[in-house]
Length: 122
View 1 (cartoon, helix red, strand yellow):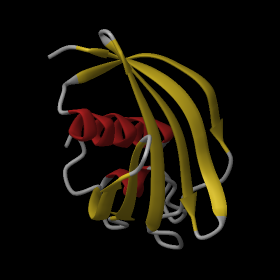
View 2 (cartoon, rainbow, N blue to C red):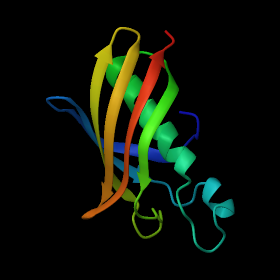
View 3 (cartoon, rainbow, N blue to C red):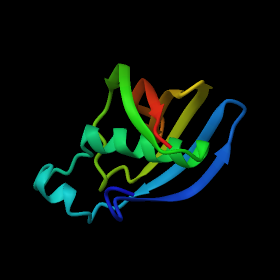
View 4 (cartoon, rainbow, N blue to C red):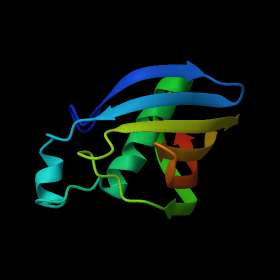
């Protein structure tokens, strides 16, 4: 985990096409003190890192982000107000590539949608 203690996984299950993960964000994590003081918001780059880490665990391989398309941050994730996220990732493995489609939500709010391609590095 690149950002130690940023999140914990409460449940993770395989789906027909990928994984579904319930995460708990750590609102006390140091990253939120600078992003932004008094109004913490989950940085987009952290969300991308979390998706990479979850996908690596699901496929059992180390990955490097190659491309991302249709990245849509649709709602701010405030870890004090919305610490529980549901991350759904569809995974398709092609040769030396892993392609994902993600929808991340809290409550009934879609916070993030994206498509990404990762290169398998080991």
